[in-house]
Image (tube, rainbow, N blue to C red; front, side, top):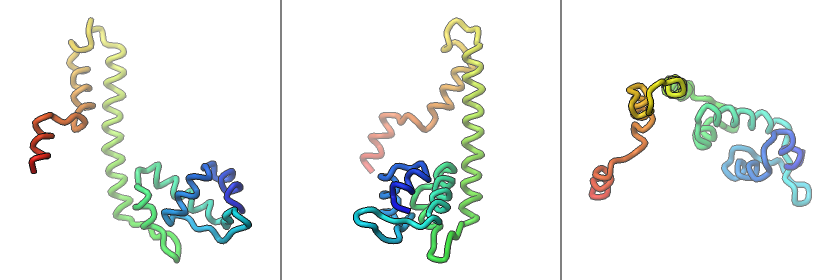
Length: 140
């Protein structure tokens, strides 16, 4: 199939397919004029790439899983990513619960609500750098 057909079948823009080819994630099997041609098994590879991206793998990590013999998925890396997802799920669940509380909170001002303040603390943790830390890092 040509690149336009692959884009339609996969739901990905042609630019993404070109980028994936440039990164070595997919390979065209030739050309028909100026159009790249791909075998139908590229759809499977694109599905695996989408699964990896949704799970939080980088394109480099996904690319390392592809060998000439086929996918070679690192089980240790899968377990580490699953652990990361568990941590993220806990953070998001906590944030969801805090937002639900904030929406129903009877405090006249959200900054008077201890639970809302804890939510702000969790949300801001490691997100906002202190000016002194920035200066220290620049000096090192």
